[in-house]
Image (cartoon, rainbow, N blue to C red; front, side, top):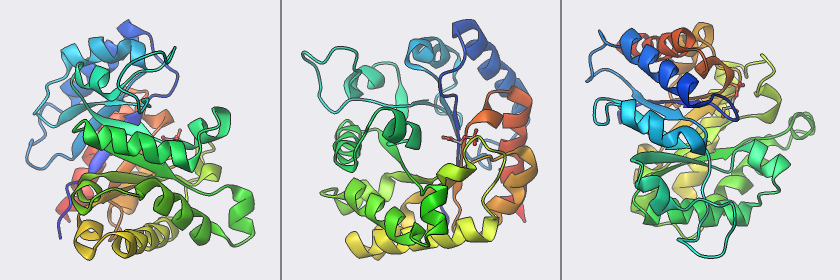
Length: 261
Ligand code: 13P
């Protein structure tokens, strides 16, 4: 089963309009020589206020896609400060990060809310990147698998086989995010295989074979080749290293190199 890799840059709370546009333009130049057939799906996830401007400079359909970092599950109405899936679609957003650990931690998002968001994203025809991952404390207690499996079961509740097959999951151990401490590639692959097993159990083997499962947490140009050489790692959700065009382009190229081997 060949799954097209996804390299998504999560810019978090960074970049004004001009900076966002400059970064995308710069990445486009750096990837100009890459074969579109061999390129992974490259996704930029800027803040809401720069989505329109980034959308204008992206070449949709040429391997470069727009992603949002969050969304709300209701379509419209009295929900001050929220943004709906159709509003994202209106700006040509294709992917939506759902349930990032920073949303869970700082904005009290629960498994139930994340499930509602994933459902809304899929109903709107977009692709959720559903995040999961354990804390350092949970890892040290030896409950990583149980905890992550629980997050995945909750996030996928009520989704059809077809919806799950086209979704993406990002395994991001919290202790590896923004710390420079990348999870060992073999260990990340082991947890990701475990997640695939959970998908097979709650849905089907076919959905488990098709769903893309990314790794996230201090991914850099120097780590990507090894990560992408693993059997079950289908790409990366990149934070810090996606802010700078050169580093992000190197990550995309490293993915292609690993896949070409
Ligand atoms: P870093 O790559 O900065 O560790 O962030 C990972 C992340 O949270 C991506 O969503």
